[in-house]
Length: 240
Image (cartoon, rainbow, N blue to C red; front, side):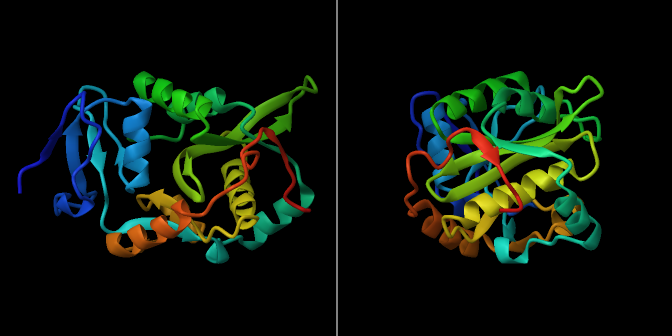
């Protein structure tokens, strides 16, 4: 099966089962990162992922990594840390800063795929109400709040697809993930799309499911209507 080539005028994608039978499910190449194309992609469980110098590539993995929220794994040390509440958690107060920190995260050993054009594209989605961030803050020695962890992703109704996260202090990215899970629980969303499994996500309870099962879960979540102020910028409290 030949690889599907997108163009700049047609935002349509091929069916996800056209993805190549290779580890990460490469579906198509080309096109651009205009908001409508990205919204169409995520609505179908497709996401862009490419490195500097590569063409724009679109993926639909089989299997797919997800975290069922009832199975989110909080070990003993994280449980103790959550009780101490050493961090302030916010929603959508520093989206651009979070994406920048994710792109430059010091623990990345594979280079970044969050290129400047990707940051700009997701900022547009954020301003349109489709991309969101969780921020984790800590008071520094100057008694100022310092961004020490966070994550961002794309949400369409009740479907949230996580894109990236970062931390500079212990457990900070885990706090962001727990906060996101608690937030989604308030609207009875069952899972977070993690796209591809990695050791950190597996440690937090992520599993791999078939693409077909993922598409079914995604469709239920995407049909779940949310209130207009659900993603409103505000502080989140983990121990309420």
